[in-house]
Image (cartoon, rainbow, N blue to C red; front, side, top):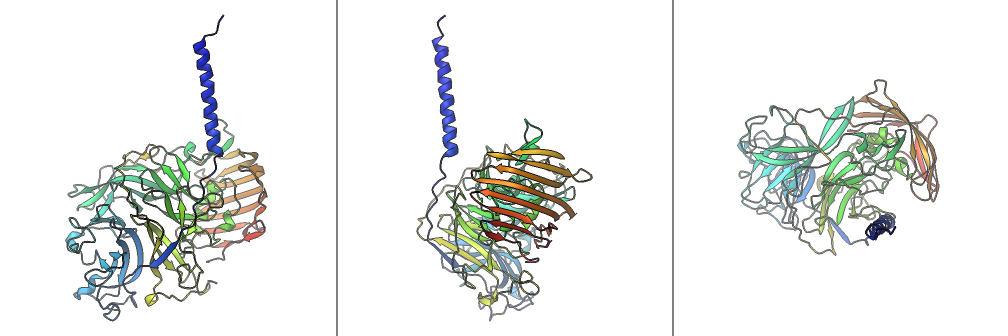
Length: 635
């Protein structure tokens, strides 16, 4: 019987396609990482601010301190550029004003100012003007108290500031006709009640989506006596005459809200293999958002601090909003958090503790799977700060992020002299912001102050070299060899995030799915295994203990992990993590490393909101002869 040539040809064609497909996958998997960019020339300068107040006493801001009688401040936080690229929004805290009816009484409390970024001055002779000082009461009804992260809308007429919108329509904020009398301030409300009544939900860390139609934010929750937080995405709509809910005043409302979360263990990074109930696997497509941090400029990706891919290594990730595809943006063992993408999405500036060695005693051993992180990630994240002292510096990374020897370029690199742009006692604060033409980045810093230095703290407090002894400053980094670019903002994106969960008012905030109590095996991608035992709390409401035994475990060539690690966790209060950590890990191959705790273990208690390090015992990591030790208590 003769073969059917058509069927035979189809069979061969199918085989050829399969081979080609396999070749493509293989080529993709082994293709070299993009070439690291060459370092750039960067010039950093300080932006002007209102004078520092000599004290907070009424009338302390005299004409001698500020001859123009336009106020004195004791804190500042930079925001975004206006669309014209010539002005920067800054939140400042005015103080020392005289009481009313003195005209300058309006320069008191948190306000939003506009600062010239081109060396120019406003008609009043200052390089800044206050947008919200003296706004009539009737123009700012029931506004919210938060004024952080000021961000300009694309129309240049409005600004997001905390949980409020500042509107100077029909004039642009930089227009001389935009006076406080012209400005209206509207609160933002997130309805969390089925009938639409009452106050809205508490929201934080707001970021405008590049389409200026949508907004991302975070909301804190307490579940089973433990702190948690979820990211959200919603449409921002103006309601001039609300009939329900508080405040019953013109306001912006969040509609079509989506929780950036999908329930189910299969959506977590560390999960159970669905085909083998006794085995764990690492799901690198899991979208597990610890804190939402912003958007790519094309509007497709959401940035977030996520559950780690490597133990104790807290990184930034990006998830594609339509498809859910995940990209790891940073992989340095230190902690990354604030981020902003360049207008063309070819670059990003992240603020990171890299270079400080702050997190290295926890994360310097690479390639350890994120197993004990089921209990430790909150505490590990909290070590990044010492109270109000941060260890962040701004770094330039290209679109593909950290890889191999490419670990970005520090914007303010230098000799570290006191008061210089690279002084390690001056730490970067959230958020850095790109100029619309992609040639500059603005960021702000604070200098370490007591009790993060001085007194019983072994770190001496530095003497500020800033005008008036202030301990805050706004900096601008200019990429001197770059040419301005012009990017068209994205069209409004869909309200729907396919991998998210539509928010229903009055619905219960979910608890994250967890691995059931028991013993599991995690196979190394290249060799070996990890035997994992998970123990529940007595009431089975949460995991309370994780122990791991590694046997020649390897996920990457030349990296083999052996040894044991065990962590027990308790919560004296929802925001406090108490860990008892025992580690005896050995890494061999291309790198020789150990991660060891003292005989009594590493016992860390830390409030994730206060970030004050307190521990007994020790946890020490040594990599190729270099030893990383934990900070001193309170340091």
